[in-house]
Amino acid sequence: MNSGKTIFSQLMDFLPTYEFRQCVERYHGNYKIKSFSCWDQFLCMAFAQLAYRESLRDIEACLRGSKQKLYHMGIRGKVSRNTLAHANQIRDWRIYADFAQILITQARHLYAHENFGVELQQTVYAFDATTIDLCLSLFPWAKFRQHKGAIKLHTLLDLRGSIPTLIYVTKGKTHEVNLLDDLPIESGAIYLFDRGYLDFARLHLLHQSLAFFVIRAKSNFRFRRIYSQPVDKSKGVQADQIIELHGFYARQDYPERLRRIRYFDPEKKKRLIFLTNNFTLPSFLIAELFRCRWKIELFFKWIKQHLRIKAFYGTSENAVKTQIWIAIAIYVLVAIVKKELKSDRSLYTILQIFSVSLFEKVPLSQFLSEIKPQNEEDESSNQLVLFK
Image (tube, rainbow, N blue to C red):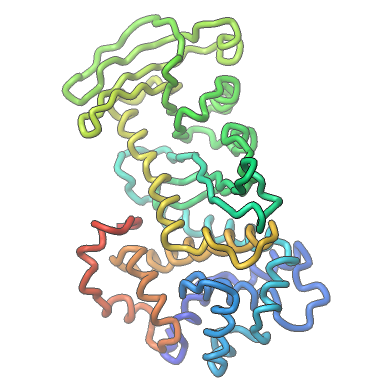
């Protein structure tokens, strides 16, 4: 790359600008805008995510302090706190949601053959939600409890590369299981759910779409065993049964047979029971698949720890969703850069390097290969690591 460009500019060169303009035109983002376009807004918010800026005033101070470099960063409009706050409040958040989806498609293609711990040809997804607490007096539209506000991020995670395929941002009161109605089903794929998603009518629709699911059973789950299959108890599998649901309404919701697997986790000293509509995979492999579901919990903890999605620069619903989607876009962008440049650094280390070197003028590939933080080996003890 051109060594005259800053690290930030070289990062932004990985973004498909033509597709971004299409997203802006789709929602008329630049309608009657004379200065500070949607692209300027995106770059400022991207800078805030990469440099860990705390507030709009912080963003303004940092960018104005490097005014002579703004043009080369691609920012053409004048950066001010009020202008950025106004843009976050009124410009449609779907512009950045659609653009993030374009980056997600690109990242999934790059990580299509990534190993996630289980040797399978099928695509494996984990679906779950996390809650982000908000102050109800500042975010009255996000009412969750009587004196508490919150939003939820419902995420469908492709385990190959830990890429968030879909994200739904809802108010805190929305129950997780309701999002199964909006979940696009891919025939032949495997979906991993925790027991909060145990709704047999919705699971049967997923079964009818020729997809597979693995879900934890609830403690009060009632069933009738038809027959048992042999198991290898040395691997922790205690039972592998073919069952039918017990109860009139349960049988109406899911009239097919299910497979029930009882597994003992030797590490946590805990017994787990899984239900699945896959009758071909070995029982131990089903248990290992569910163990991989932890990647989505790791993803939630990671983005909360390393991206600006817990403290927001604006209080409107549009501003919150804009910030979340731009944060996701930056997460996926760094994953793309890591793969394209074949870097062996962890995603955490790459972000830490970028946070203090965005204005450096060094070729990006050379920069990542030469810098070797002394504490990288100790990072795993304190930090959550994706993309090892």
